[in-house]
Image (cartoon, rainbow, N blue to C red; front, top):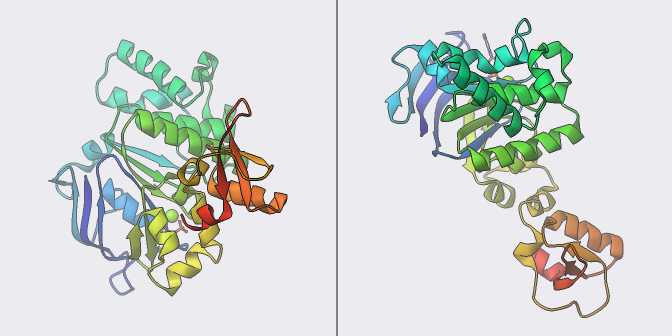
Length: 310
Ligand SMILES: Nc1ncnc2c1ncn2[C@@H]1O[C@H](COP(=O)(O)OP(=O)(O)OP(=O)(O)O)[C@@H](O)[C@H]1O
Ligand SMILES: [Mg+2]
């Protein structure tokens, strides 16, 4: 869907390139997280896709079309773009913000109003009174949701997001990430997400590209990156607790065994992740947990060995 081919960006002809001969394929309908230390070239890479930054060298294809040719303004109307904080137009109401791109595309008023209603529902802000407010009259989390709604307004196939949840407190961020994941289940998009939050990359990315000094050092699924970091740099970047982080990728249902536990023990829901289950085991000082459903009925059991084998 998106293909960057040997792309280089030099802001200064005499300095080292900010993006250095980078090749990246983002499959249709998938989410790719770009992650790496500050200054490694994440934002530059992403902004070359919608040509807010022009590459010095290389080619970029979206849906097989070379986007380095053609009109960049038109291109941007077909790509949603969400950035941290400054995303919304401050002098426009929320309704006007959401309608910005559909208006440019020439939609009639009735269609815009219908779409705006739909979008507010999608991002969980079902309150008509919000529409006439200005961005400064919203909370940070609400602004971020409107930012996502605006990016989705004209139903673009591609969504580019640069630290979209960066300015939000950790608890609200977790909720927004979950909601965003649910939204993506309903509206299939090809997403490039820039973040420096590894947990966010693991939670949202189908694949993660780890960048260092303008290059991609590893491009793989979260599972593969956490279980087999390509080199010392990636291993350090993902951290010494990577094996525990990896457990968040799996649920109790993925590892549970049939039958009741051999001893009476603490219960865990099948939907809990394996890190949570391991934590419960440690707290209970037990090698086994009972898996229980919402009514408290035991549906199976989970052993420490089964967690370690995943
Ligand atoms: N307009 C510019 N002119 C010159 N150099 C720039 C410009 N924009 C970015 N750079 C340089 O290019 C490199 C990559 O910057 P970029 O913004 O892509 O990094 P990043 O990975 O997004 O970092 P961060 O995590 O801090 O947002 C940095 O060394 C930066 O100083
Ligand atoms: Mg950046």
